[in-house]
Image (tube, rainbow, N blue to C red; front, side, top):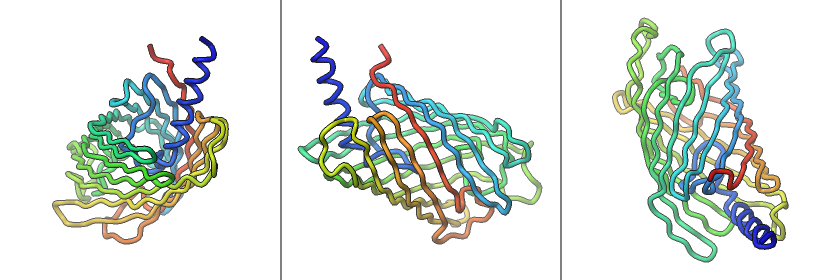
Length: 269
């Protein structure tokens, strides 16, 4: 029985390693985390606007089954003075299509998010990970081709009215169309031999948003690196910067991201 358990564990972790290049840093893939698993993340984001500010995002992720997973996040930052709890978010993703081949697969998922935030709502760049309260929904499509993973995301967000926190003379955010193209490449290991082998992945993502009411938009470029240890611990380091755009008062403009993630497999009954 023990031999069967360890064999299953090795096969399971090998599968995680083989698809590690889908673990994008700034976006989510269409694939889900393993069934009956729990992940814990801590993310730190920093930016100059014009003074240095930072945000910390603790997060818990749950894989209910192969098609459904959920994230719960809290947001803390010093963007409005003292470091404080800003709000929180619930994110759910449902995979509705899987096409598998020997060294490739295609996934399609739908996602939704609801967020709350105590921050003043005066920027058109609706960001539901700390800056705005609102709802978001969208679709994700991910294609794995051996060591290369490509992904596209399309989303639509609506910000809740917060007139009591509105700054006079500043635009009130309303709706925002978001889109992204992401690529991830597995650099190491060259040949998989053991699930304890470290994985090293390179990422490049293009992140954009458009305000449908004004036509204002921006496009960011976001390179990143990632290390995975023992198929359970993940470390991300990335930086996003604006390539073009005309949306003012952006908080995610020229932002670094550092993240540590710890996964616990087969812990839910």
